[in-house]
Image (tube, rainbow, N blue to C red; front, side):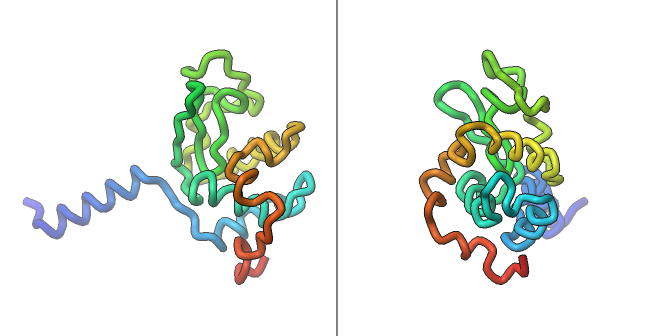
Length: 149
């Protein structure tokens, strides 16, 4: 029989696994830099960090359902209408050639590869409303300050 403390610990563990990983700011900055995001397609590491913050709060399992019936997935909120396949969104393009569920893992390599594809689109970082409204033209140094990147 489990004690009350053990039950509470198991509940917290279960909740943590449901919520996914939320990266610490500097940890994510180092990962993005190591994956060539700083300067990619003309955007700074601060741009990528700011966008990820406003889109998902650095949460790998963030999901947002849009009014057009599409869904945004993962740390970069990649949209199912254009970039990934969730088998629910009508007329999905799937330009990244991935299942949207691949964007919800704690290993963000697939997310990074797809985000690089998104930013090469004519809209660039404006594909992300979070970047457009909160990051464009702003001093983004706070997103990488003290991270050694």
